[in-house]
Length: 343
Image 1 (tube, rainbow, N blue to C red):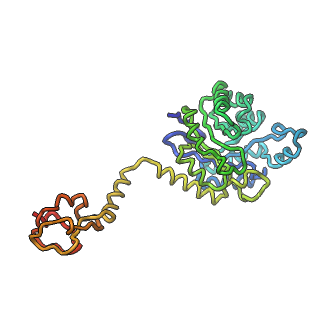
Image 2: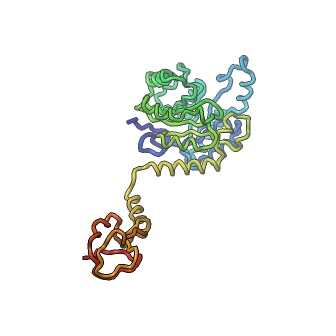
Image 3: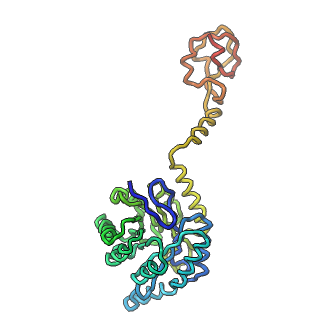
């Protein structure tokens, strides 16, 4: 069985509730006040954590090679001061806070200055082995998304790189770096495969599909962590994250339904036994007289019927035991037949 990993204030692994991450991502457009509203929405929905991104754009994108991509990202950047403020705000709002580091310089800031409790490696950096060595050397728990991995060999190499560098607590997220991800290419069953490939580590799911029915299915497949984007307008095309995101109201419903699915998957309790016993009282059938029966009549199968409720009567499986017995009193049509009616 995979060991448990502590993320923030909670443990992740078998027997623990799914750790739900609201991904603030870039859909706050670098606006600290909007980012705080994301915190509020995540907390109100019952998510365990809110995640942001640290991307010093100059260190992430070559302005010379792709000036358009640089300009598309630069204005959405949350400053380090913004991230400090958001960390403190999350403390007040009582929700776990963490940040994806996309560059070495941001990783150093998050580790040494913000002292984040664990490190998130996004799909873009998940096959950058030099970066993974830097992450692993911090010795903190790591959550890694596999959105760019194409083979088991690549997956195992990324995990081994983290392990060899010094990280032993790893949570692995199935992911597709396609925005939004069409269901037919999502390959959700890969969660089951990863559980076999990496039996020592909890497996989760980072979702980019439209809606939240596929994340609900990931719960049933055993995902222990879920990451889902949070935005205020799913039609806003300034970010690829928006179409596959949850609005605050969506997120409330998603979290509620995840907890309900978890409850439905749990082992039965004494309460279930009690509820079923209560249901038997009205839903189960009992043996009744199919027509009026006189005293001194020998019971035959054609005299019996099975009707609700079960309460107070003989169960249908008692029919073979009373056939052939003789009534010692008259029994009205539809009346439950009792053992005291028979000799």
